[in-house]
Image (cartoon, rainbow, N blue to C red; front, side):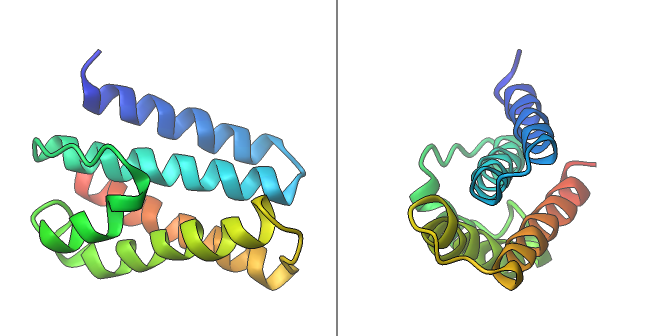
Length: 119
């Protein structure tokens, strides 16, 4: 299985796990992991391998060919999931219903833009 196929499989696996749980913390973490693999799939399509989630926003901005016009929206949504949503839900317990909705919207932004690039 190629790296692109591996990342697509992981995206689907983690998205399914997010849908199957009622835990807000688990949803946020699974959305984050699913989003990471979608971005890596887009990068793999361009023969780029980011390898660390901490490098995703910077690498997307340095290599706009990966996502084209979707670069800014995906980088910002990924930063929200990684830095804000995970801090509130996964590492702490300060997340509100509005924060969870924003995390879901961030995931959906990444998903729709990345799937558009992968088509």
